[in-house]
Image (cartoon, rainbow, N blue to C red; front, top):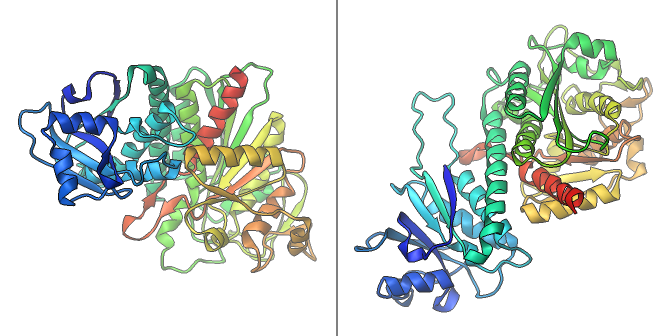
Length: 498
């Protein structure tokens, strides 16, 4: 997709379709008024006939406009004539992009950057336009014999005023980097487990590093992890013929003395549950158990593309979790890298077993903050649904910064408590702790487990089990929380530059 900024008269821009916004009660945006006047009142006539009410997210395509620089007009409802919320604006963009998805339209002029959005300007609006159209046209074809996609869209022109040009160009760069990071995360998530193995993820990290002069990659093999004492991580890989990997992607964009931001992504490339076997129905979706890893790789790619003045490390513990004669068994006890012992009561609670050793390993990097993200618990989906990701952590400032970033990025999170009382649920008669805490508060007790390995870190945990992919007819990876993490990094970069 080709994206660009234009500041010239919108009515003279050559394209297959121009997108304008209309408010309720037949009120037009500035760009819509110009287009309406240039088309002999075609927009007003449609509104007067009642074909479009202007309700938020409504869309209507006018297909025949002879003698114009543009062949079609897409009218999109903006709701009441007042500044929109960020979520409402993103809903409008999604409706516009979806309306054009299966048409023959190849080039589009988007005038929606002139809409008023509360607490947002042209830079943010431009970024959201890019992300919305990129999200809409993404289509998985990697393992299909027919590589053609439904969308013909190839060129998106974003119309802005001359005064907004510099902000829009900054938003364009951010939007393209974030959108490409999201698409990478989607692609990796959607790949089947027989292709996207731990070794494949390591190869993807190597390719990302090769594109940037500021990035290097390290791959720890099982022998390396054994020497480090990562008994917890390696216990998960025992049932698989695919070797586990601990992938490190190191981006050096800041001063050498600056502590890195460490992002850790759970990389279980297929999770059958191990000996505690999952039900067969829906098990195919367990290829998505590496969406945390995919999001880390996508975020690091975006950070390098934007040349952020930060030091960032992405860590991806990658393994499969399968049943085998050598696999973990309920009742087994393993010693983690930290020296703490863990009783395995359920082999399907494996994500925390690979994350805990990675948290201990992250201490070696003397990080400023550590954020882990994982499709960790079905309990998070039960508690929060598919709208926000769950947030827990031991540092209020870090959690607050992530919450602010989520609001800006329109990538919602909700903080859950991490109270000391929940730790009691992890007691074991035979080890320092059990790997599950029973049926109550599953998301919280999973985070409590991780917290025992993050005591020396400023740490936050994102449970993305409900947000990393869609199920049903629209099944597919979402790329979340790449937008959230990128916004957090942009906020940190702004602090450095201030």
